[in-house]
Amino acid sequence: MVRSTLARTALAAAALCASFAAAAQDQVLNLYSARHYQTDEALYADFTKSTGIKINRVDADDAGLLARLRSEGASSPADVILLVDAARIILADADGLFQPVKSSVLASRIPAQLRGKDDGQGSQWFGFSTRARVIVFNKGSVKRDDVDTYEELADPKNKGKVCTRSGSHPYNLSLFGSMYEHLGAQKTEAWLKGVVDNMARAPKGGDTDQIKAVASGECGIALTNSYYLARLMRSEKPEDKAVVEKIEVVFPNQQSWGTHVNIAGGALARHAKNRDAGVKFLEYLSTNSAQTYFANGNNEYPVVPGVKVANPALDALGAFKAELIPISVVGLNSIRVQQSLDRVGYK
Image 1 (spheres, rainbow, N blue to C red):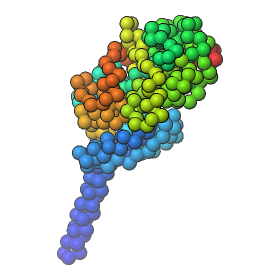
Image 2 (cartoon, rainbow, N blue to C red):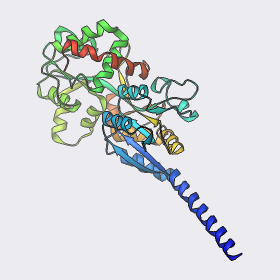
Image 3 (cartoon, rainbow, N blue to C red):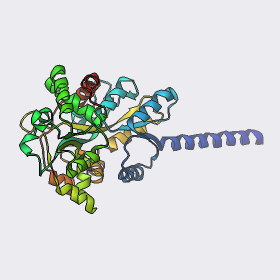
């Protein structure tokens, strides 16, 4: 009898430990993130504080994360994947690295053009912030009217003035995917050839480097994501203030289809072990609190309509007309346009 009682007690204790272990497992989220912004630390801390779910994070760029996911396969510990470009999101979706999420919260808060198509099982991915692809120009040497459309980057009047980062960088590829949708394949390739012909120097560096090159006079015109410019506008460093003094910004195509916007987005990993925690995190990223972190922390635009932010740089940049092409279309087109880059010599 004693042995039987002890055995039952031991089994009950083991079951209780297993229950606690399972509960602890439910309180973990394994996050693969391409967001390299220090301000996101507050975002993650807020999620843990409000839910009790601990985040284990792996940081790398988009390409590195996707390569890791492919190599890990079904053994991958990833629950949620955060990427910072439409082209890479669409590529990962096409590779079957995501699984659908059916959430009334996300469906009601994320605009349809900024999330994956819902085929009845839910969307494969969701955009959580946007950034505009704007044109900056040297106000001492370039007229605003000469750069108020993307098409004018290829106009002979701007020969020797244009600077960009690599044409194959995802931020540029997404813009090119947008132009492909507006202009068609042949006209887009002709436009790309015109941009190459107008370059002041070979593509190099990042978006901030392009802005500084415009300020220094090395270039007259450059493309940049809006948050890089806003970061310089908010800086207290004298050298950054000097850069901002010498340039102006244009939101292109306000009289036609609108300025191209790209997304940072997230998805539930195909082999997520902590699915419920993953869905909670994705839903959290659509809350007003998280959307405010994106705007105030990294100068991105919220995707949820009506979210009010207090960011002096975004306020100074002002409202603009954004294009309404579905991000999924832009992503697919950006893959199609890559061969054109080789043909026109866009490095």
